[in-house]
Every structure is written in C-alpha cells, then in structure tokens.
Amino acid sequence: MAVADRLQSQARASPRRVTAVLSLVGYILVFGTFGGVFPFPSISNETVILLSDAIAVVNTAALTAIVAGVYFIRTDQVRKHRAAMLSAFGLILAFLVLYLLKVGGGFEKSILVEGPVYYAYLIMLAIHILLSAVSVPVVVHAVVLGLSHTPEELRQTAHAKVGRIAVAAWGLSLFLGIVTYVMLNHIYGWVPRGEDAALLLAIVGPRLRR
Image (cartoon, rainbow, N blue to C red; front, side, top):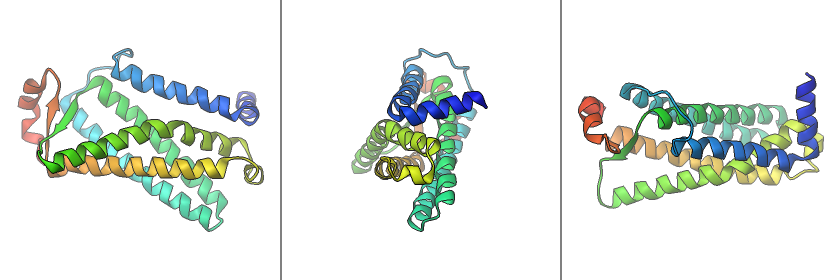
C-alpha cells in the first residue's frame, strides 16, 4: 500500500516525468524486440496465427471501450468513463504482451494482393504503426493524470485536452489495425515474410486462406 501511495504521489507531483519514463520503457520493449535485443521463446506457426486473431479481438475490445468511454464522458458519467478508459488501457497492455510474443518468437506476414489495394493497405498500415508509436506518451499521460487526480482535480489539469488527442490517435490506430488485419487474414490472404518464408509457406500454406 505504501508503494502504491508513493507512486501516486510521484505521479501527482511530476506527471510528465512519470509519463516520460513509462513511455520510454514501452519504446525500449518494442524496439528491443524488433532488434532482437530481448530473447523470446520460439513459438509454433499455428501459435503465430492464433496470436494474430487474439490481437485483433483485443484491439476490437479496446476500440469498443474507447468509444464507450467517450460516450460516458459526454453524458457526464465520470465513473463509467474512467472504468471504460482504464479497461481500454489494460487491453492495450494485453495487446503489447501478445504482440511482442508474436514478433519476438514468430514471424511477420506479407499480404497477397497487388495494385491500388496493395498501396492502400500499406498506407493504412503505415498510419496505424505511426499513430501507435506517437500516441504512446499522450495515452500514458492521460492515464497517469486520471489515476493520480480526483475528477474535481482533473478539471485543473490538461487531462481533457490530452485525452481528446489520445482518443483520436489511439482510436484511429486501432481502427486501421483492425481493417488491415481483416484484409490480411480474411480477404486477400498472406505469405510469411523473411528468410525462412519458403519453409514457413510449406508448413502453414493450407491455412493461409481461411
């Protein structure tokens, strides 16, 4: 209890510093995983496919929670707003665990489509990734403020302004992530990306189009 109180006190006193530290930890985990710095157990190809589906479910639930949170705050239901947004944040943490496990221990996919649809897919994917990266500090800052201040105190902070930015960036990122997931996994299909693509394709080929 004392540790929690101390952390809350630090968040109240220096919310930007706490936000910076937490955001930095998130960036290190993601970039370290992509760079092979952090060792992850190798997972089966079937598990990679399962994780992709699980991530889509988690992201859909997170987007739903965000939309609900926006509705609740606009109708002055502060407690429900808080619960919805914290649920969304918890789901994003779950997404991070699943995503790092998939990337660190599995393989990436390339979409089986050409022409304008391919470039539209790439653009949406790029925006999704960019917004995912840049929204981290604003999302974390909104959460840090929300957890360290009472509803009355929040009126005197940047929580509402930061929250609106976080919702816009975070929500659009999640939406585009869901769209590209559907295109990749349920409309056009995919092939494994990387040096072992031929071997992986032979193993998971029968399951590429479902």
